Amino acid sequence: MEPNKPLIANINHYLTALEQQKIIPNFWTSAEYLLKSKAVWVKHKGLFGFITIDGYWLLPPLGINNSSISVYAGWPDIKIDGSKFLDYQFIYNPKDFQSMVGSQWQTFRKNIRKFPKRSNGELIYKRLELEESVPEISALLYNWADCREVFDPPTFVRFILQGDNRKGLFFNNHLVGVNVWDENYYYINFRYCVDNGSPFLNEYMRYLFYTDDEIIQRNKLVNDGGSLDSESLYRFKMKLNPCQILRVYSLTIS
Image 1: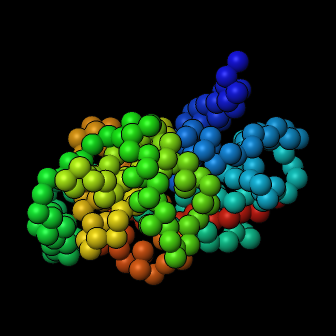
Image 2: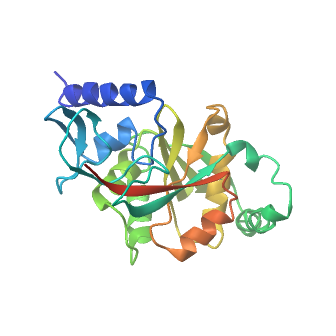
């Protein structure tokens, strides 16, 4: 038996139940995230779902229980008494990036041209296979993460090195950036973008992701996560013109 087979079955059961109940998922809701974050499956006193290493429910559990429970991340825009703001969820429509018409796109439209213009050579954006470019990805990851605060480093590293959906940008056959994503029944989740720090490369990597035929053909909105209490990240994501900005709260349900 595969080591993760029972867990995968439980994850699929949980996600199927959410979809049947028409619940709009948050950024932490995907089969790949639950696997790579090492979330623990629990059935307890009529509830089932996933808990964090701190003992909180990672996502709202399903089932019936009359006792008080604490949930790390509730469903978007669900706020009850005792809720504590956790983060935003910036939602984008990939189709909006096809034309980028209007003054609201002026800054982003200008910035995405700068990296290609300054790069005197061949640029190739392609899907990364599991064992491809591991030393280059590791070096890129190490340099990018230096002096940065990274949320949940172990999960971050697993996605960058072993993610099911990763595309890399190569400049003259040298890896300069990686985009990583996963998805659930409702959204594509844009997980991570790491690059070598070149000016305006991050904007260009985002543009490549949102205009990728593979993303557009999924015909889903993209959940780009939050701003992690960073004003600069909040401003950056606002420049990409989200079609929605949702809020996620930590909850105490009684």
